Length: 392
Image (cartoon, rainbow, N blue to C red):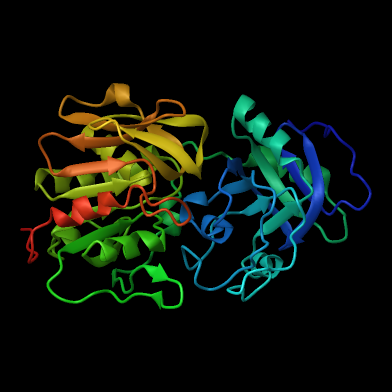
């Protein structure tokens, strides 16, 4: 039931984060006007805010940036990870300044407004992050009213009425509508995006649960030819494309909910011994297909500085992460081993089948933004595929 908020609106406040428990956090709104309900999370990256805000895995989420200066390099058409941004908005400490990058084509505020995303500045993001760490990721409404007028009872009802990510299938909302061939490789300064490559390349069919574009570029960079299919594509339609391997992409929402239709397809691919590589949501779905369980995390992992230990060698990789669910390693069956663990909290970050050509990692080896310590995973996957294609 709605109850009174914990702080009065200060003079000049045009932005509001209203938590479902009634806590009101006031600031200065920018970007799009309006109100949206979702889960509040935090991201520790110090760069790549445009890539983060366009990552489909952030569907249903409001992002708190722990780095105080966000927006200072502006925005451009090259640094997006999806055609349609899916994050609801962002919370930042400092006001957005004018762009200071030669690559900027648009002010960050204007870019947010054009993409329907709400921003709030002037927030004590350290205090908000501590609250999330201690109490978990809360449901909330982010609101921007240029005239400073907020309907508090309606906004509180909106925050309290949002169902939360647990049990929610969001992959179906962000997946592409059609099967398509991917064109384009890795971006380099002064040259833009490379071509898709030529020659007899192993054919990878990527199941799009909410994929970032740089994943497909990384597969191309590793030597693959990529075809993308929607999340609910049947197994017979996938194998009809004659893949040498299947990639399971990242995406938003509860893996158990997405698994209702995704897991039977993955299990059928495993039965046919199709090589499989999954990341993030795809990794979790691969775990579910093996018979393991997934669980909602207290605060999740989001940032470009997460240390992960590779158990086989003891090597530590600094990785990019964005997930609020994880595979429960204690539920893995005997034919699936844990390959990577988080050095922050010991949670599962990688699995591999001992009797199938299938593996997955919880983090984002394509980075964008983030370190590139883990690009070898794309090379391992693509390098292990046969060519030419032909899965029966």
